[in-house]
Length: 133
Image (cartoon, rainbow, N blue to C red; front, side, top):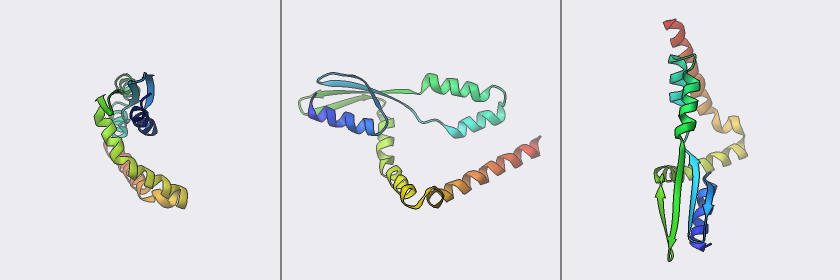
């Protein structure tokens, strides 16, 4: 395998992509787009019986993403769902910093703002549902 292609595949694997096929000059990798938790909660609240199950089935059916790599000379060409790769590469440093903070200070010390926000939103949903029903 060409060194530039192998390097790019390694970077994509670090982001969570899985190689499906590889040759000397090409490769394809698959992954899944992020799960939309806000839409999932919305569907569960407004369609409580089968809404969550239908969204899970929809996400599993439509979330598969593929990236194709091909090397010509020293240059690696990419095709496919590059928007997701771009988002992952942009968030890479922030996620790494968050993981370091959790490892150094502990989960609660590093994540308390997100935890409080989640609990406040959950309380708001419960209050809203009690007012409606």
